[in-house]
Length: 185
Image (cartoon, rainbow, N blue to C red):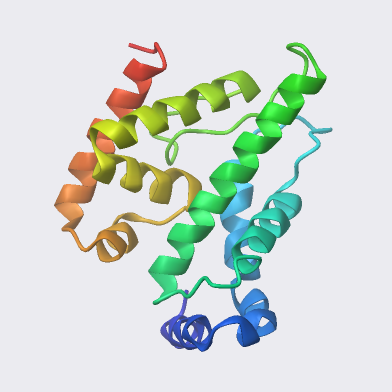
């Protein structure tokens, strides 16, 4: 995101609920790109598309009337969590409607890991992420920002106020621990 757009986004976020329309115009393309990355490899007729993921996550974000975002990173942290919740809720719905038929395919990480997840595995990832949160909250935060929020290492470091080296270390640990928790030794 260009520096002028970053500044404008921070201004809109700090302006509060009255700036919701301008906010959507500014962040939609970036959120849509993140959602598309999360939806790579979906089967052609999948019921949850990137546009729907962005729309639902955005509605959850702005539906929180009391929510005030400090800056861009704070907003994208909230957006990452909203996208995670939408994906998990969708996976639960798919599993409750069909027994083993529908698959949701997402990739853990930025291509270096390559773990494809159907609805059951996405729910297992969510459970593992909850367990990881209890064990190492910072590693879980890095995972949510990286996997669901689409933030890169410098953005995660700025959001969590830690060094980029620490982000790399936490991300490496979190991936290994999540695979372990999900039975992927």
